[in-house]
Image (cartoon, rainbow, N blue to C red; front, side, top):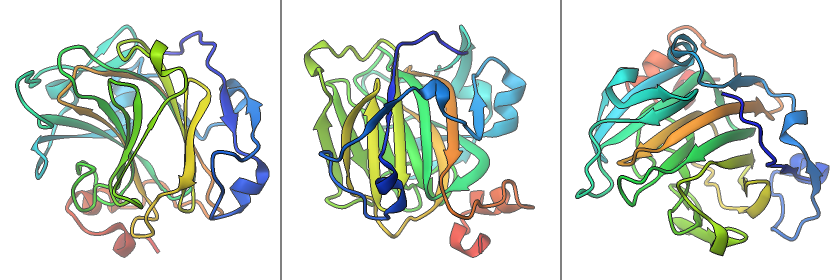
Length: 264
């Protein structure tokens, strides 16, 4: 559901988009409204039919046990947003992970915007998975790409095949950050450079992405938490866009066949 928001997002300077290496957070950037971006796909989560047409669902009981799932096993629609329900254990660790994988395309360079709200049932978090080789894989496991998420203490966190293994950084105005209200997360991935904005403010920009995972699926993940997602928007920034929904490609990737063997 489209939310009236005052969240403004910042676009990288043209020089960053043209460079595979980018630069640090000191790079000059220009303010731009997310409303002005021409997105390739926008999904407001108002319609169950639209959700099921564009996403595949998996449940990971532990970090290495994955199975295909149905939407209503782990998710529901509440006030025009997707919310995690069921199989949440306040006494467990990072288990019982529900994953919604966007199947419309695979991406190397892209811009993504999504509204996120953390639940109050546990101390864990919602995650955006990027460049995932295998749909429904957890970001700490092989083929799971990189996870981008906000910890409840206000740290933006990158986890997966990235330089340094784990990157954590406090968001601006961390003292006024409340995890259980809506926040906008905007991601720019260009080459190995990942830039993350929270509520329109740049949190980090550095060459952290591994060259081992240069393209893959995008997913929304709930790690043992009753979190919510809304207003999923994405656009391809690659010079050569991969063809969406190539015959049997998703099904074969879901079986664990590496994307590099499926996409030429």
